Amino acid sequence: MRLVEQVPKLAKATTTLQQIADSNITPRNIRKIVKDSILMLQDPKQSLAVRAANAISLLDEVAQDPNMPSFARVTLWSAVSELESIREQ
Image 1: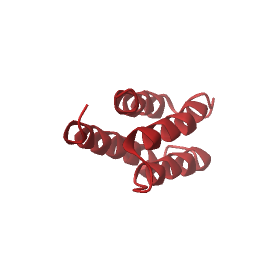
Image 2: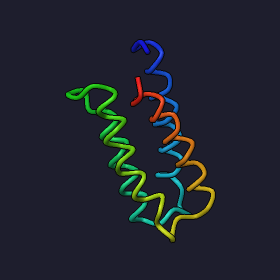
Image 3: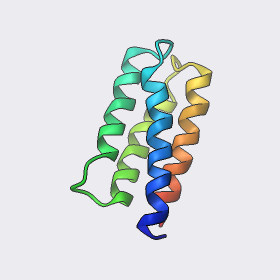
């Protein structure tokens, strides 16, 4: 997949993650990990695929957190799905 096709997916995933990070319902520890993953996605020193893989790794761990509200988990899975399509290219 060309970079032109990946950038919108990255933007969509970042926006989705930002919704979780901005929600007051999301526990603080989960918000911090989600914000860390957003920063990771914005790091220009690494390729897009590496950024996506690193973020997925962080988000997979937090998705298992029993304190995560169900709306956040579903939203998180949506973002991870976008990132997986970037990683696999």
